[in-house]
Length: 229
Image (cartoon, rainbow, N blue to C red; front, side, top):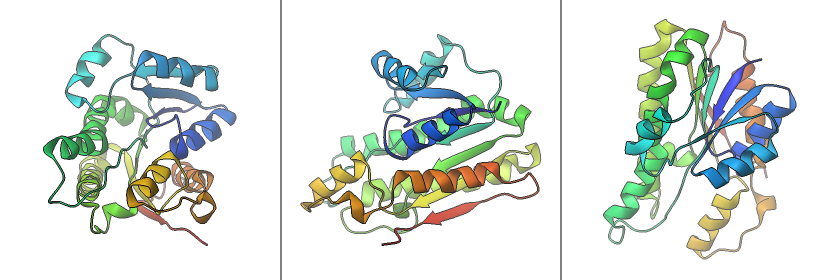
């Protein structure tokens, strides 16, 4: 069975992907920010392995992984975790910038570096669940959009670098998706949150699985998913 390393498996799109892959019998390695969260993820997905590492502090991921066993085989690395804090450029602090850049961009780069040897051996796939903000930046979204524009650049560079090694790289750009993150965004925007207006995380998971399951003669580079309502 293929082995998938997933970040953000505790909610939203990441949880939908973990459920779907677990249900079809694939092996999961779920990244958690601490031991308590790892225990919760393991209980929700019997048989899954967990790794503990805080994406908000990517400088310490190497140290954290040196005290744990990494999987020998990785068929896909799914970067789904993300954070968002809105605000105008004139009010965002360096701390707010760093937090979003660390979780949304630097940590995915560091995780990819750690798992590239296994991905090369398996001729696997890296999937970056980006955002519509990775293609267009709007007022009050500067820090988040910058992190996601950077994530697109990371994916595009990685794709060219690893093509010869047989590693496929896919960026997925979902529009607004019904999730705890979306509820927080609405709160920051001062708007009422109605999840029925937005994409179901299961729909994004379906799109990601289609890219993962594509025969080896083809590769999905960029996939945009927008609300249909």
